[in-house]
Image (cartoon, rainbow, N blue to C red; front, side, top):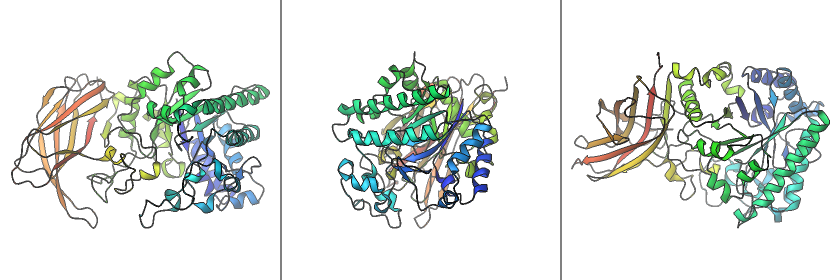
Length: 503
């Protein structure tokens, strides 16, 4: 099962009817089973709305002024191509500087979760866009009945207006949904999800069609629970058709999708993990570079997609959902091949590139996670902090999720060490099996406008005796310290590349 979800950016940038049809035609080339585009962010609707506030100030307004409905045009073309359309609704999107708040939001500030109606005072990055600074005011409290009714009214309008196949509720954009104590208020969100399911059933009955209800959610189940999202209850009540757990703004090769599969076991709810179209969002380890080498690891290429899909399938998922895999950016180089890239039968005969650039920690405040060293909330930056080894005996362990049964195939394993001394000795083990370095090569890195530094690439070959499907325990230890080294050794960016199984 192939799903694609995108925000409204490409559509909002269309100023002419032909641009909308071209965007839809590009989208059709993906051959997706289900396609989802944002139809509304909180109170802002990307169509002529009476239940919410129609978006303004975008090129798309020129098409609206001519009496066209761009969203409707887009849906019609996808439906004719046999693609199911499930519009996305951002449940509590934070984007929006004060001048972007709707009249309804201004009228009901007392229902807002924002603590400051000015700018986000703690952030001083020069040139940063306003919607990264504020947005909290646009996040409303779902414990308030009127907030739930306003949101439900918009969703009902969307379902009545368009020949959709369902709706998706986007909870990744973004918590919080309640004031404290949030966990104790989960009944309010369950009431809302139940109301959406009931509304879709009513609309579907009139059309003689079952309408799907999906939910895009943070991958951390405990985090969801603490934020008042009782997803297990939604599944048990049969409210959801599918779940898309994931991380926003970047992919992670270590996410525990098996926990979601277990949560949905015995129900009709499918699990389609959400893969973001960017691999690494961090330059915290190397300021000014996406990753240490800075050689395109942020690009979402076929070997990385296959590795992510392989790992997800090994955990029992039912399909794959891509998030913000925009047609304007990715259609020409990826859309035609997407179904093949995620085909579990074909994946073993291809090259896969696993890239572990962070520690699994859900980052809820997405405006902190754009890869800015000074742009993280307290406690969040550790997700992108490299491991440090300084004194002899220092060691760390890192769990690596891997989705391939190697059999007779071998995999190439490597990681990077910044400021490694010539006389430092490194010991590496995978699942308690000692690995010997096939090579340790030194390179120089010159970040923009920052001092040059040296890093090493440690390489070894792995076989089935070292690496298994599922969790693998990697341990790196500093056995001997270079007495001339003055800085700690920073370790990160673990990679596994596995080639085709020709057997």
